[in-house]
Image (tube, rainbow, N blue to C red; front, side):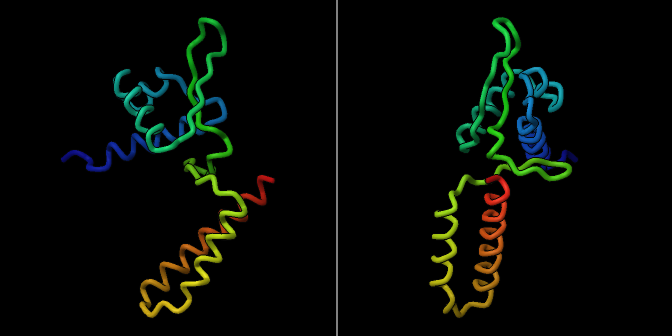
Length: 132
């Protein structure tokens, strides 16, 4: 039986390759993901449509073009790089204050989700402080 998550795995591998400081090339993506050149371009197009800030560099006049994600857009973990939303400190503060208006929520499940959201926003806020 084929892995139902195979495309998701390839997508995450591509993000991880593109998140490396030097990025990767079309050939690098083809080899690592075992996909065709056309599929690589479709993947890059999908990433751009999803709002991933891709940068393409061509180091020499006839050198192979390198693609990478904007460094400030990526949060690194030991085995994977994940994109992080680019919220400003003011936006994060506003989101926290909006959550404060939800304190009277009666649904216990909603309260749990709101607390998770609050923790994630606080984590993003701490990440922003580290970068500055």
